[in-house]
Picture: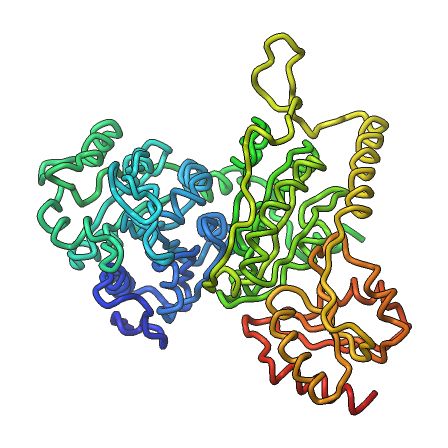
Length: 279
Length: 291
């Protein structure tokens, strides 16, 4: 059976503002699911809190709309309990790098087989426009009236530095490329991180579609995503050009590979036996 | 950050709305253990979990009975107007300093989102604040201060905890605040705090006009919970009516005061909706009929 993007569409209409970048992500995500012909009954979309974290409500797949900043631990919980489920964790940059910042490195270095899509709008949109961990220096918001003076986190560079085995960047204004990237992230064995530049049209009047359309450029054709140092260098280019594409990809044992290795030769105990042995 | 700033000896505060306050419980418990004064403001919304963003009073038990781990209490102040919120903020800092313990200001979302003209009746002179010789920093010429809550010797920890309990006992004796509204000869006694109390006043005025002897006890400190107005009210009262924007939390403390002396009725709104004056009036009138 060949599925179409519509098979993943939920009954609820997205509550995002007209023109929100997250619509592009939702479309690309459904396109990617369809291209991989994934069974909606076998997908769990897990999110935290924020505009983008409402995404699971708009899909026909399973989902958990969870705690602020805790999408990754909850996504890992789902994957640990049922490794057969395709886990896609989604959320915003505040969810991922402010309150959830402590969880990110450990999910990445654990190389657990899930996909993490962070929609980056460089601002807190849901709460009406406060400075975010990804906001530029000098960026003025209601909570940084004299301009931001904290260095922004570069999501892709951060992900690579803490051990993500897949790190990519897309732009919600380029849905075809974004679909390719999501397909690559989902099919990657291990922790796959995808940053999506997803403009907030309501509260971020600096980092607009136009701003990004002038800067976003695919990584050079000859670029090879196998060198961590080079990948971090390319991810940090932010001035006139912002690269999109796969910065880094590495085949490595996943969390479940390690568990299988440890379990080799160990006779599995069935739940029934466990209950009996307790008696 | 609040813990750090308080440890450095300055007046520090933070504010959030329900889920954020849940997240802070560990820090609050540590601040009590470290004897650090601070003010924590919670504008409650409907819970549990993410709940909604409508106003609620569903964190009453969390605020008054602990929330974090360990044997402790916070003085909990519950304003019912913005003017009172402004006035209580100064008191909150003073109480925190007095007992070297965090103080919580507990209000519902309505108070956070409403606008009202207020008067700042006080000025605070930072130079006149009580000295904090226990704070970290500036140890020149004296032994250094180390702020901690760890004590691995059970006997010592027990002693320390009894010392903390002495402070809570002093707070119980000295910090109780409440308002009695139209309590003369009151037969139907409403017990409400925060916004609900403000709405209830209107209904009580109307009930009195109709010849129904209704009155209001409004705890301003939810911990320590007032006892006196209940002792005073019980003899003349016929029924108590507890109204809360939750599923029934303060009613536990009201029961401790009224015991089985009088019947206690309860009506709650646990989802983010607010009582209207006519709704409360109807409740009062129905109690009047059945008394």
